[in-house]
Length: 488
Figure 1 (cartoon, rainbow, N blue to C red):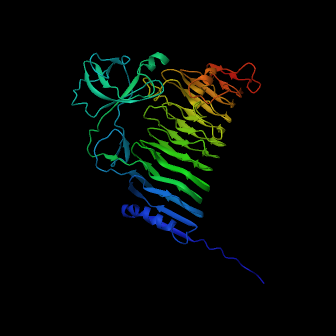
Figure 2: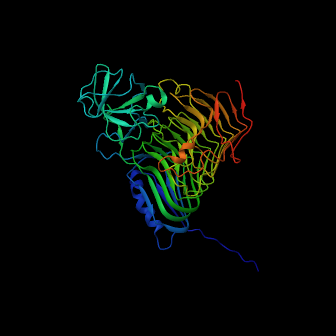
Figure 3: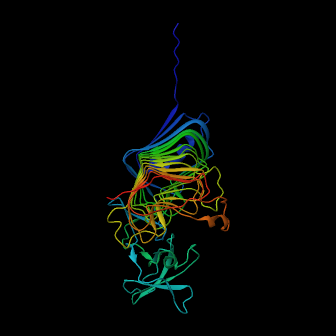
């Protein structure tokens, strides 16, 4: 007797072909997921077209569905944050709906003619030399100054512009002084101006988060072939927090002109970001917290990001057992990849993993001074706390900046780092590889570090400029091997 077993997969298909379908999707998805008999697959398909989403458009919380897969996939669809009609704000991004492209409301980077100078009898008012036309207080009522301060890029409201001087008001504490460029770089600051857009037909992106998926158990979560264009300043476009799943993948998606950071992972293991494109975004692209294990970031392209000129890296990973491989980075303001934990942070699991076979560079046009770049940076930046971080076989080249812009930079007494087999060429204003001595980090306020500058290995790297490598004399865990200087 022949016995046959038939497996039936109960699935729900949710199609979206209009804005009306799109607006109804959150409720339809919620109903499918919270049904008495949950499906094995909820398949969301977003067809060709342009769709507008509001704040926390998909807000999935507390799903206990270990046998359910959620798939969100698109086909030639563009997702844009809604315009709530509230008018102009510095935190909004703008989209030209005719060209279907982001519109930058900031000027190009300009060189200040002086360091900030306090204005006599002007409480909290400072001025810098500039080449801007005169503008009254009424003219600049919506204008902001974005100026470099060491590794920060704070904003200040503009007061007026007169006789070659730009006056601005210092509000709050940015964490660095107005004169940081003088102290650390001996270079004058760079600045950009941001003003209300002249065109009134632009779409203002006033929402930030498209998807928040938290405290949930699923069999799998996937997002594929979606195109995101523009959003507002805020937390993140996509936030996975406390997701337990056998598989969580975002692949073949496009992220463009985001004003917020892109993807954030907290308490989520086994996430993969594959074959995505990030272009023209203002802050970071993906951040992986310490309490995430086995993150894979593979085969993605990052071009022209970090437009806000801040120290937020494109990839910031402090998790365990990560793999960042075969990605391409071009044009950024501070760092393409940042690894390791700051010396003031407790290490939960210990940063560990491999960054390999990535190409990181800056185009010739981007390297024209004054650059949209901060000082004291590294294309690959490694912080103090690491359990076992390996940076190998990467190609870092054609990196420039105003001062101290390294190829690979292990900062603040970095520990337990292996830097091997990398090729680092044409680093114009900094070391090709810099493993910096910083023993004093042990005694700095709030430091959690007990043995800085230990456990480091640097070997088999090719470089054509200068390197600075420090290991402690009596540290058997550290080693500097053969590193070869080449001439191109």
